[in-house]
Image (cartoon, rainbow, N blue to C red; front, side):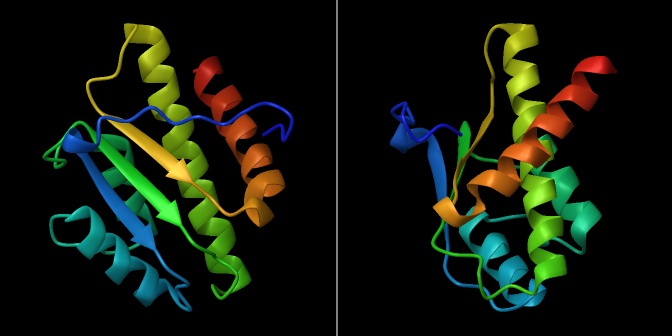
Length: 134
């Protein structure tokens, strides 16, 4: 989360499922965009279901899911906070899997708006620390 270091995402596009999340104004819009863009089986039924789907990825046809977010500013604050928390937890979980196994058979990559950097960083560090201690 440091603006001074370069950010590079290495991705084999032929094996990735790329989902563009474009200005959702509600939880329902967000879920619809994720269901379509990621080809989620049955779509997320709720926040817990979305969290499970992003930490499982067994449904993913390729090796990587890439979520590209244009902006989350139109989402109600409580939904934005919940969604960022889910993304941070899933990202920390996949990072831990890669560290423990030396690789990740599946991978979740995120592109988030700069406006979310500080909050996402806090949530990510909290999730990573919690997972590392368990």
